[in-house]
Each structure stands twice: as C-alpha cells, then as structure tokens.
Length: 279
Image (cartoon, rainbow, N blue to C red; front, side, top):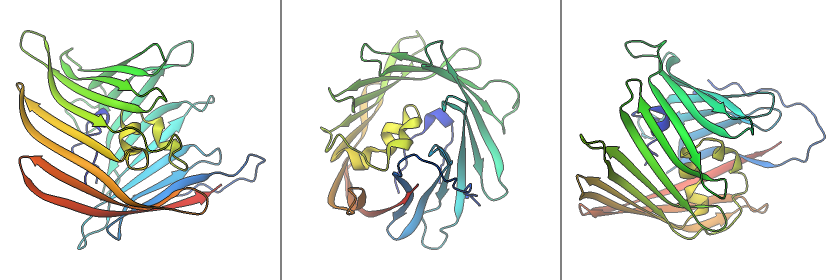
C-alpha cells in the first residue's frame, strides 16, 4: 500500500489499542465520519473522534496478509478553540513514543508553524525540526519551510490550488551547497471530482498531509515526479476507478491503479473499501 511521505512527522514508516471515547449525547446534527479503510481486504487505517467530532486518533496497520497487526498510531490534541495543538506518534509493539509535534497560531488564529521533537533521537528535549507556514492571498497554505535545529533546510514546499480551493500542485525542494532551492519532487492533482469529500473532512486538519490523505475521494489522477539534481528519477501516476457510493453519498469502495512510468514497471492495482460512523 502506498503511503504519503508525511515528512511533517519525520517518520520513515507509518505502517493501534485505540480507546474510543464514549459518545456524549448532544444537539448537533449527526455527520458521517470516516472510521475504517480496508486495503485488499486487510485493515489499513482506523480513525477515532472526540464527542465534538474532532479527529483524535489514527491507527495504521501492516498491510501484509501474513501480518496485518497494528504498526503505529498517531494521537491529536486540541485547545479550547478546537485548534490542533499537539500531534504525537507511537510505534508498535510497546507503544513506543516516536515524535511529538506542537503547532503554533498567530493572533488571528491562523496556524503559523510547528516544532517537532524526535523522542528517539540523541536529545529528545531539544527541537529537532521547525516548520513555518506562509499563506497566499486566498488564505490557503502557500509555502511550508522546514528547518533542522541547526538552521539547515530540511524541506521546502510550494503549493498551488484550483479556484475551489482544492490542491492543484505540490512541489518539494531541498537546498544546494550555495543555498539555492533545488526541485526534488512534484505532485500534480487532476481537476477535483467533486467539491464534497463527505466523511473525510476531518483528515484535512493535518497541514500538508491532509490533502494527500484525502486524494482518493477528491481526484481521479495524481502524478508524481522525483528528481535528483534536475534528472527525473521516478514518475508514477495514480488513478482511481470503479467508484461506489453509499446511500448517504459517502465513498464506499474504489479501485486504485498505480502506473510506474519511470522506471517502467508493471501496474499495481489495489481495492480500497471505506467504513463510516455517524455521530
């Protein structure tokens, strides 16, 4: 199963005991929330929410028929304004703390960046990465600059959007020895299928990665390019087909095909199925 890079978490693999907090009766209208993703009949993701319908936990499973056990999980915490303030990652077995990430906001309540701590690193109490966000004229995330604790650039992202606010292109850069930005990756998203991503909205709480996580219900195709010193090293194309919806309009099932264009390799075809809760 393909995974998004999730560089914001600095985890090489996001492959989880989740305790679902008791649902509290309240007056808000019930809404569908994505709760489970199946990959070729295997557990892939499970998602949990608070009684305020905030996404609080994400479990990720090994997608191996021999071992479909829990591999890692991520927890999210919010402030009294329901803003995401803390993301913690854990690996299994043993609920091992991996990273801890704190988000910052300005006086207008706009998310301005984050500080990440590597809990398994040489100095877990010292910030390991710092991210800074800049917004465009439409108040959408325009660039994200991620630096190491010594000030060196770890990654730089530039994002552009369709008129409806859905992501159109995401470019990634590193830095040359002369401190020039150098393109290392490009992701191009097709015209969105629908303005609605019913049941998936909560996943967009994660900056950068939220758009990646919701790409299957949003887009028919996603093209990816990887470069090394200006040379194209890898080009893949993800396509979705055979979509089926539930009666409430949520996405039930689809087929995902990955074409390996550079270097050439046989296509990879997988079936994804989705389950929801109403709360």
